[in-house]
Every structure is written in C-alpha cells, then in structure tokens.
Image (tube, rainbow over all chains, first blue to last red; front, side, top):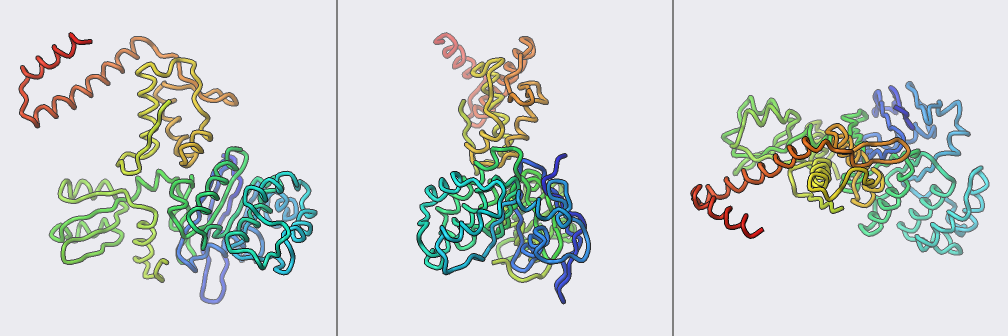
Length: 291
Length: 124
C-alpha cells in the first residue's frame, strides 16, 4: 500500500502529559479524521508530524521520506492549516500572500485567485479585520494554492457555522478527486467527519484508541438499550460502559456478536454515532468531559 | 442510474449502494459494457467517503457484476444468461416471500392469494 503519511511509534512527553507510541497510516487518495477530546494530544501529534516540536522517539514518513531529513522538500508538498491565526494581523491579505507565495516552488496564482473569489475574500482588507470564518478561509486558500499532495488541518471547522463547514467538506471532496492526494484533519465536531472521512483515528490520553475505516467502526461497536433486569455481570463484561437510570440502561459494546447472542430480542440495538463511541470510551477512562 | 441512500437504515451505506447497483443490473437497466461513475465522483456526488463507495464496487466486482479496468474505470460485466436468469429468479422469489409474509399477517389464505396473482398476471 502506498502511504502518503506513516507515523510509527511516536513518543513525546511534556511534564505530566505523555504522547505514547502513536502509529498512524494514511494511504494515498483518502481522508483521515483525527478525533479526541481537548488535551488528548491531537495538536501535539500534528505538530510532531510537521516537525514544529521535537520528538523523543519514533518515526514520521511523509511521501515515504523522513520528515526531518527531507523537511524542506516535504513541506513544499504539504498544505497546512493551523487552528489559530499565525499570520501578521496588521497586513492585508494581499501583503501576507506576497510574503508566503515565494516560499513555494509550485505556487499557482490563478488557483489562489479562484479561491479568493469562491470564498469572497477581500484582498485589500487587513487580516485583523476578518471574522474567524474569513481567517480560516484565507488559510485554506493559501494551503490549497501550491499543488499540495498532503493537506493537514488542525481543527479547521471549530467555531465555524454549519454553512461554512459544509462548504469546507465540499472543497475537501473535490480535492480528493485526485487520488494522488491525502488529507488529515482533526476535529471534535465528529458529524463533520462521519460522512467524509475514510479512516477515523481516535486519540485519548495521549494514546491511539483506534485507527480504522469508517465502516469497520460501524461493525465494531454496538449501542445497546434495554430494561435494567437484563443487566447482569455477564452482560456488563461485554460492555465498554453503561449508563443507567430508573427506566433502563444504555451502553456501548465492542463485542456486538456476543451481546446480540446473549440478549437476543430483549434489547434494542443501534449503530452508534462517532460522538457516542467517543463519549462512552472517554468516560470509561475517567478523562475530562468531551465538549 | 438512481441511488438513494438512507441514513436511518440499519444497513451500512456501502451495502445500500451495492444492492441498488446490483438491482439496476439484474433488471437490465444497466447493460454489459455500460460505464459506472468513478469511485471518487460517486462519493463526491453522494457526499460520502471514498472508501465506502470503494467497498461497494469491490463487492460488486467480487460477485461478478462489474469489472474494473485500471486507468479506465468500472464497467458492467458480461453476464452469463443462465446465471442472470437464476439471479433474477431469486429476486422474484425474495419478493414473493415478502408478499407471503405480509398476507399471512393479514390472514389472507393461499387460495385468495392465488386468485389475486392470476388476475394480476392476466392484466399484464
């Protein structure tokens, strides 16, 4: 399999927080959604991939090449969108673009101008006068205008309205029509990822919980609901986490077949949403609440 | 080609796509040699992930309904006429099974059902 991004055994610790043995693999032509609660290590992992901070151990291969040894060449081919605005606030969009564009060998002014138009970005306005959504569109326009093969985005949809989020997903869909590309994007708005991501990578407490295709996830987990009488020790064994109230229980199982065989028609089964998978998993780990 | 996806269905999206394309082929709405949309453009239009449409196509290919020529795309495969007839028969059988179930719920007897069928058959 031709991998556009391969992360192997990546580790990094900061005081109490530890990123442990992170391994991710994204084949060319696909989109990976990177999810997890705040503070789980998403941004740290992305910064390590981009070599913005030093790693303690592990390896990152982008386009099959080491991300540190070949940093300059690799970064020509990556479109990167940060979660915050790192541009000079006091410049206009045009001035900022004129600073960034020359760094890229394959900068395509026509593509950039097209995105300005699509996003309705005012080239003569100062960056500080843009709304949050506009700033995001500006970063996106810069990231998509130099023929990047790998697009990496850290929380591109947070704080944005549903209309823009849906526009962004449409843009990503058209970018991935080229099967030579790959997209990694982190988000805690899982509904954005649910329909677009081919692979979902879930990180919690600095560790990968799973990294799988979207349909494997649907088969791996099952949401079970039923009356309290059903909830005995055996049933609990097959559940990751159970919520109980006076009228019944609801829980997530990662052993769907065993649960179905055990409870038969007495319980109600649903395919869990990504949100539900995250919630039940994070709660079990007694981590901070998922926002 | 029509493909309508339901988010409320317990069937996974790839299965819904697979079944609908298979249905078009069995009904003859898609003929041998007809080109199918590319995996990527189908995903874009249906607003779903690429890997989901890929799985649907992979299964259709495994079952001999379509063929993929690398660099050219996917096409409806030449169907063996006997096999096709058998597959279509089994489709009819499945539908009849549904009708029988529904009738039983209504308390409709075999004779009444046969009469209905006879009437309908003559009308065609």
